[in-house]
Length: 154
Image (tube, rainbow, N blue to C red):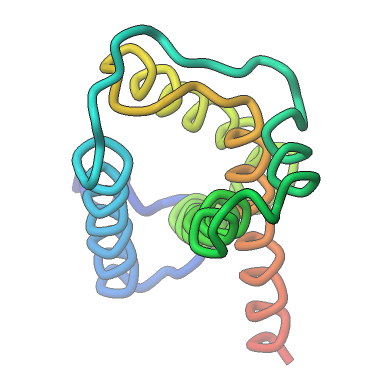
């Protein structure tokens, strides 16, 4: 009975599909926790943060020749691509997130929390630009999901 209630707002009405999606979403979350908090992280001495929108993005664009290609791609495009799955899983598991405003709002809250924890645990920094890029990535995932679902309906 609880499982039925869990998936009552899911896009698919097939329990097995929803269970698979939920399993993949949990796996994605575990991978992201590893990437964001444990993998190749060094502990900072103090709190590192950037509250100025577009500051980090401008720095990476303006001084791109001062960064390795790997650092440049990882920090700009990685922040977009790694959060695309959120824009896929959330609307498929709960249709209220199929609306852009709902998805963007919940992503900002989730990513803000992730960024704050990185800063407080000193395994990364809080960067408002990461929130922007991650949210745009999730929004791209939503657009991709919508497009695929529209094709399926035809």
